[in-house]
Image (tube, rainbow, N blue to C red):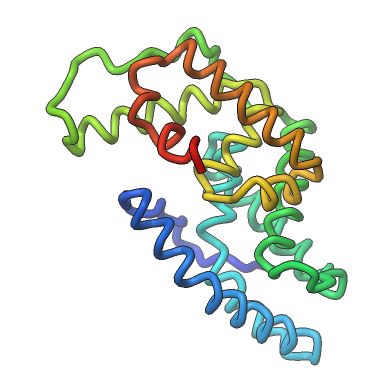
Length: 219
């Protein structure tokens, strides 16, 4: 079964983080309702209803996979496999959490296994440098360079820290959702977030003062 259209998935346009968080909170309830309705239709024999689930979650699952592997083509293949496994396991969703939490936990577990099977080519954290030339404060160029640098640094972290940071910061999960996705106690996720931030601060002290990691640290 093939779920993705032929065209490659485009990355989401840059959106101010607080605005993005607000929009996600506003849409969460609607999406949860739509997910449940589609699952109910699928389980009663309407296979076409799975298209709605793919449409809503294709971008987030591909982007999550990309944070694990760093390769767009491989990320699409990993997300394709995640949707296939979710389709086969729909009856296992116990509805004690929203469908998207279950879907992301399934996908995260798959992605981690895939990275253990075929590790991504990693860069050394020492090779990640802060932007060389300062730009006007608050400029789009500055924000783009800073975010790119932070993402490269996070991708260079050991897997246990990278996974926690990716879910918490780049996919706006709270600690409870990240812990469920990773299959870990919340205390362990908090400890990994703290240690990951500590490592990044030591390498990128200037840009972390205004990055997304700083924005969510106090939440």
